[in-house]
Amino acid sequence: MIRLSQLKGQRVLTQNGAQNVGSIRRLLLDPATSAVVAAELEGVIGTDTLLEWSSVASIGRDAVMVESADSVRGPQTDAEQRLVAGELDLQGKQVLDEGGDALGPLDDMEFDEITGRLAGLVVPGHALPLDRVLAVGPDAIIVPLPGSA
Amino acid sequence: MTRVLRATEIIGRPVITLDTATAIGEIRDVLVDPSRARIIGFTLRGRGLLSPGLLGILPVEWVHGLGHDAVIVPSAASLVTDREGMSDALGEQKDVIGKEVVTDTGSSLGTVTDVVIEVDGADASVVGYEIDRTDARPFIVPADDRAAISDEALVLPADAERRAAAGLAEFRESRERDHSGHVPAGT
Image (cartoon, rainbow over the protein chains, first blue to last red):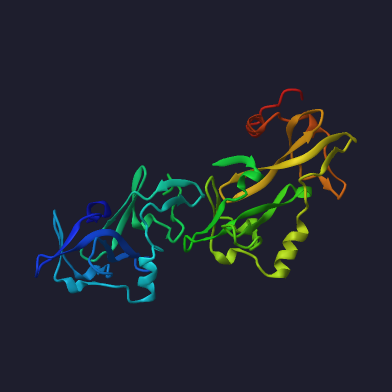
C-alpha cells in the first residue's frame, strides 16, 4: 500500500535513459473502478502530462520509475480530458457524512501501488477503508455517520 | 441526533446526491404547512450567480440527511421538476413569513419572521415560529398541529403565548424539558 502524500512531488525517471520526465502533481482516479488510472505530471518539457498508471515500473524511495519517455502522453479519451481538467481530483475534496455534516477536506489516499486500486481514504481524525465510503463524486466524498456500524 | 434550527439557516445549503456525490443545487426556500406543523419540502435553485432561480422541489420524504454543511438526497431523481408535481407541492404549502399570529382567544402576538424546525436524521418538522412585534423583543412560540391559517392570519392555541421563549437557546431547553416529562414552570 502506498499513500498519495508519499508520491506527490516525486520525480519520475526513465529506466532506459535515466531521463527526468517530470514530477507527480496529482493522481487521477476513475470513480467507476475506484482505481488510480494515471498520474498527471508537472515540470515536463512539452505538453504531454499524462502517465498511465500501468506504465509505472517501480516506486522507489527516491523516484518513480517508468520504462521510457514514451510512457508520457497527452489525454486521449473524453474521460481523460475531464480527469486532467480536474473533475475527479480528490485532493482536498470535502468529506461529508451522510447526515450532511462536513468532516473536513480529504487528507490523503491509500492505494495498491501495483493495481492502482484505492484501499482507503484519510479524512481528518481517522482513516477510512474504502468499503466504508458511500460515494465519491465531483462535489464531495460521502461517508457513513461517525460511530455507525 | 436532534437539531433545532431556524429554517432560514438552511437557505443556501448545497444539496448533494448520495449516489454520485454531485451537487444538484442549493436550498432556496423551505415549504411548510403550518396547519399541520409540517415541512412539505424545499425549493432548489442553481449554484452560482448565473444559474437558474428555481430548479425544482425536493419533497421532505426524499431528504436522507440535513446537516450543518449539506442536504443529502438519494439521487438527482429526488428533485421534482414536472409542472404537475411542483404545483401539487406548492399547493400544499402556505406562506407563513410575514403572517400575523393570533391566538384562539383573540390576542395578536405579532408577525412571523422565521420558522423553527427540528431535524432528526432524515426527519424534519416545524416546531416553532419566531414572532416579531413593535413593542417587544422577538420571541419563539411552539408550533401546533391544531393551527389554522388563512390569508389573514395564523391562529395558534392560546397557550403558545404562555410557552414563548426569548430565543432559540431557551426554546431548545424548553423542548428538552417537555420531552423528558418535566412539568414546565407555570402550569
